[in-house]
Image (cartoon, rainbow, N blue to C red; front, side):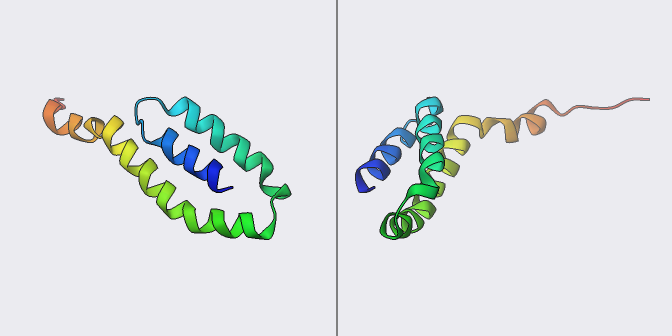
Length: 78
């Protein structure tokens, strides 16, 4: 499990190429029912770290969308 989580963290380090990380996450989710107690506990410890990386990636890759309405200043005239 440690190796798998390390690989996932490595894949999440590239915010502009999320496909590989998504594939790895899907495989991990499919295997959740088969995981042992130790693996689940380790996963539980690492999930906040992985979530923080994913949120950072979202801000890096798509943060400009939050600023877009402020820059464009749409006006509605009737």
